[in-house]
Image (spheres, rainbow, N blue to C red):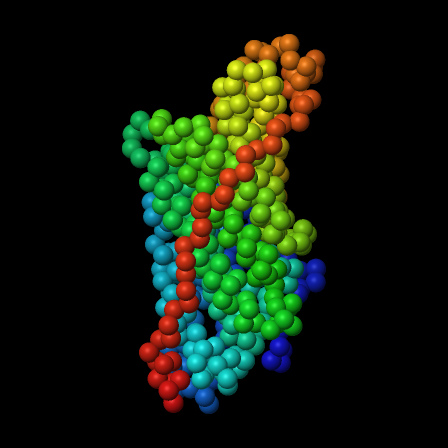
Amino acid sequence: MGCGASKWRGPGVVRRGRPRSVGEVVVFLPGLRVPRTVDFSQSLGDHLDKSTVERLSSLRATVMTMAMQESAMALKPRRRATRHGGSGTANLLQALEDYLPVLLGLVKEKLAVCLRNKVQFVWANQEDDAEETSMADAWYEVLSVLHLMAMVCFLQANSLLLPRSYGEGHGPRVSEESRRATVDVFLKAGGYLDCAINQVLPQIPPEKRRALPVDLVEGNLKALSLQGLGQGVDMQLGLAIDNPKATLAVKRRLACEMVKYWQQIKDSIPELPLSDGWAKKHTLFVKWKYAEAKAAAYYFHGLILDEGNTEKSQEMATSSLQASEEFLKESKRASEVFHSTPPTSRISTPFGTTKHLLDMIPKETLSKLQNNQDLNTQERTSNTGVSRIITPPPPLPDFPLALNPEEYELPQLGPLLKKEANH
């Protein structure tokens, strides 16, 4: 492998650990990238104190074991919802946070000059067409750790958003507490990814950046960060829908912000290898949620326009509601394709924004069309009764994006590495 970067591909071979089914998916994550075994004593034994090498080895081995366990659990077709996202994911996140300050000793201070490129770090990929990527650069390891921390947060969020039973007489549901908690988890994930983009990627030389797997390229990291924000706004919109005090204007603003996030995701996401299951599912997830966001935005926009008294506002309200119905159908089709694409997944019980749209858009659109039979912009097919948009919908209002990732800074060096650096 030398001291550069390499990718291992198995031509004609099914990727190790490739699942056939992954259970219910509310929050997309492309599995978990898992670190492969590294021998620190061979690479660093002549440069660092024995206790420091053992500490590095122990921390990374713990991360590797826990990541493999959580990856296997995450890919089970049937897994239970947990109230706080799961103790296993919390323990893995803590193990990564313990490892990072020690790892940073290889890239910071005086140690970086002689140690940064000594260790050949290897990680299994999920979206790249190469099964694993090896690189002799400790910044690659830092980047991989931050990406894994973010994906663990996504795993926690998905667990929080699976329906749970809360006692006799009530069916499974996603609680308000879980939805609020998920917003904070999404913001934390965004902080890890933004740190990776702004503080870590610039440290990796251009030739090595070109060798990074598609999982870690800037566009994919940015798309995942934006996904967390887009799904966070989705949770906020669902809570606003359930709140009788929330105005239509508030709901429309949140829905329009959601559209902007998913548009940015669509613009940021790199070209993914569509022969690969995870990458294909990732592309389909973006298509699904982008269409759903537009359905929500046009729906609430149409309801506000419908409050106007002019013929023009009524025409625009009708075309907006028709647009919302068409985008809802598009999102349902995209959802079905997403879930049927290997690794297959199950559609979770609708809640929040999705449930409201499924319940209300067909009713509101039909009611509006029935009340505006004389409008030239309304046409019905004779055999299916499906409305078609003749007049293009009015443009959506443009609102500034309010949700931002939680700020995250790389931690300070651990005490053992500070001691080594002083040597």
